[in-house]
Image (cartoon, rainbow, N blue to C red; front, top):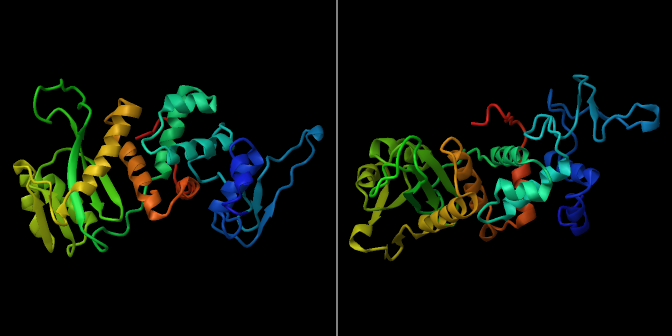
Length: 311
């Protein structure tokens, strides 16, 4: 199967066989692999029998000769045991990957013809698939900009007239011409932020921040630290600026307030994952909508998310 086949791409959104074949090509690029034992040597397809006989194996079912267990491409993934047709899962994934500012669960409900509860849970499962491994640290390919923004109102807190103490803080680290990593943090104090920066940025990196006091305490942890004085009206000094992370925040906040409108503090980290994923697979880095969808689908394996444990 060729990923760029336009006819096939269109069929996968309304045909179960095409959807399954598309997903199999992504999850099993070198042939079927048993999710139970990891074997790929003795895999056979279980042929569907006539429905008139009352005995029909579900399409795509396979059996492993080593562990003698049956499986399909959705076993061991966030799609497992879902009653939602696979072609609707692929359409939901494509819509979330191709919508720059996100797509609401209410809109997914309308487009997929499912209940709101189902659409909401599908969206969170797809966000789970978007989670990165973050095994490679930032800073090896360019300067890293660090900054924070504020979202919503903390539970049990009334909106204050001034300041950000009543809001939820989100820290983002952006490597120029590279990737972003965002975190819902309890506060923006130096002691709170330092572990996030040290765990995600190499010590040899060039860190760029605004002139907030917490970053002046964190800066010495890295080889280079340049500061742009926002408090004095300075927003760029040659290559020294935080415009990249500010640009990411612009997209993030337009999505949160314009599309989702209200985000629970319990799930804020899932929404940061979603916006990080689309930014890290943006067109500038060579990804189109279908390739971005394929990258999200590659992340469905080995993850489980139940409705009762959606945190």
